[in-house]
Amino acid sequence: MEENNNQNQAETPQHELSELEICKQKCDEYLNNWKRERADFINYKNGEIERIGLLSQYTKEETILKMLPVLDSIYLAEKQVPDELKNHNWIEGFLQTKKQIDTFLDREEIEKIEAIDKPFDPNTMEAVEEAEHKELQPNVVIEEIQKGYMMAGKVLRPARVKISK
Image (tube, rainbow, N blue to C red; front, side, top):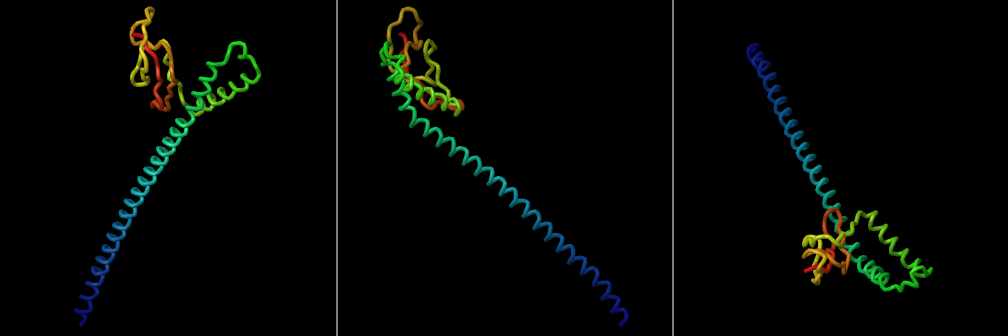
């Protein structure tokens, strides 16, 4: 009987050790699963932040594009003001609106596309008319019909221009 008792004692530590190893393996498995899920969550969160940023950028672009026709009308009205009225208080007040919109666009990092006397660039300009011009080489912008704008290196609206033949 003593041998049998010794045998049970010898088996018990091995049995307990294997249970301990099993628990350790499960613990490691759970920890690794948690680490994977945590990494997946961080990747998901970063992806959502990026998507929100893109949505915000898109919304900003749409808002600016909706506002540009108003600014175009102000530029057109400014061109039509007779010289004798340019210093009139009402006209100066009206043109202050243009300055405020220009300041807003600058703060939002919206850049005007410089076109006059520049070579035609099909990436940032749209040629709507050609005209003879003896002093300039062909494909140089003579007149800006409608201002173009860029945001973060992306063309929001190309400049509509008249170019030399």
